[in-house]
Image 1 (tube, rainbow, N blue to C red):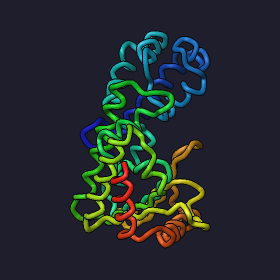
Image 2: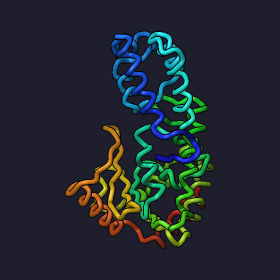
Image 3: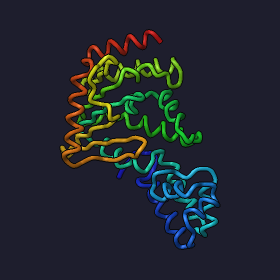
Length: 271
């Protein structure tokens, strides 16, 4: 799996497997390791599953407590360099080679459309907070994904954005305005269509939350869903087919690409 120049594939998962190996070898429970490192049992479990990156002194303390003799420290450097969470690596691999990418978003301007300043503001809102190195790595990884727009063979890319996304001033009005102007530039690409969902719609097919549809290079459909409850792919019928149908309805309910561009221009002018 290739995630670009920002780190090795599966780094977080590899660290998690190694952590579990040394913990079980040392006969230390997740709860006991948590006490030593200042983490909860559930947080240790998340690190072992590759769903959370270790922060602060966790790695050094765990390495010493578990007698790993530097092995955990070495692998942790790869995790830090990766700039992406383990759960996202499968998605990035599929996105980078997809024949089509289609996104519905109701909270923020999607990562593929973000400027550096806006991306930094969004990633900086993470809770629990990230340190400066993690934010820098996340921004770099996010911007690197945007090479997709100019990739050969050319993918078809579309977005449906809630109007509220255009007015949420993450990073401040200047940062938002810069990003809205960038969205307009991207919308002029021949392989991209961007639509805005107006706030006065009395019916709405996207109330279940944001999602991404991928037409893979093998012409196979994938649905990527993320939320508070987790992040996962749907690749089986009927669930996947339902979400593809939902996106078609969303596009019909949203403003046309031309009217959407006019609205984005208007919002940007008013900032």
